[in-house]
Amino acid sequence: MPVPFNRVTVLGAGLIGGSFALAVRTAFPGVVITGWDHAGVLKRARGMGAINDAQPDLGAALAHADLVFIALPVGLTIERLPEIARLSPPSALVTDAASTKRQVCEAAGKCFSSGAFFLGGHPMAGQERSGIEAADAALFRGAKYALIGKAPPPEARVEKFLALLGAIGARPLWMDAATHDRAAAVVSHLPQLLSVALAGVVHQQTDETGLPLLLAGRGLRDALRLAGSPYAVWRDIVLTNSENIEAGLDRLIQQLEHLRSHLRRRELEDEFAAANEVYKRLRDLQ
Image 1: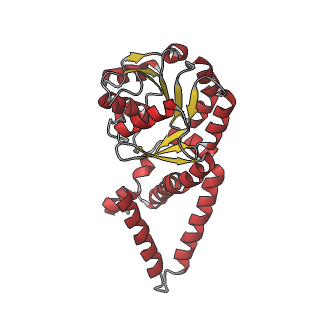
Image 2 (image 1 turned 90 degrees about the horizontal axis):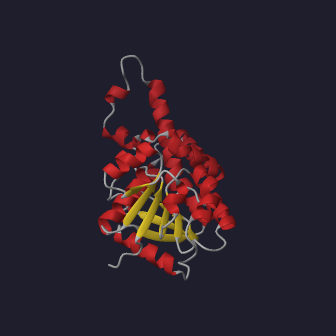
């Protein structure tokens, strides 16, 4: 496959940025990848082979980029977008990986009126660990990758990015920003908060003997995997999608109340059947 982009700049060399860099390097070994982050993070990223060039200066990092991949927290992404738009080469494609899209795309619309082309994106990939040490070249393989728009725009740079996503194994889905945020609240943000809430109950109920936690098996570990994610990763996600998350929590509370009201009536067969069907559909989608 022809190399879609010769020079890639990754802003934020954490789990997502580092994994993207490793995935691109695996698919296209000749691509020059520049990283921008704190000096210590860049040193580790370079040591892992994720990047060729470490640039703590944003202007220098962006100067020659064909593709700019923003893997920063949502708030910092929004804050830095005007500067990124100003410093990126006019021929570059700029895309982000933020977990919420409406506020990011609104901000981008104000500063990417000409020159570099902005494409909102969100890879539905991750794990409970964060940081460059958790980066994995296979993280995007088979993962859904939300792209913001009703359909691919007639833009050669976007076509090249789609080719790159295909090369690293991602599966693009096009949608508008509001639809993305509503959907992500249900399938990503709500599960995270549910895992945190369940972990809180377990913590409160565990006594000095270690019970009931000592009795837990794989089922609880699976349910609490997301509880291992740090708050720093989720703070801006919750703040920028609070309305959709609140609506999801309302529905979840209603569902829990329904289950509680039927505990003694042997009337939960329909709920289990519906849950089994959702699980089967999810399993088949993987």
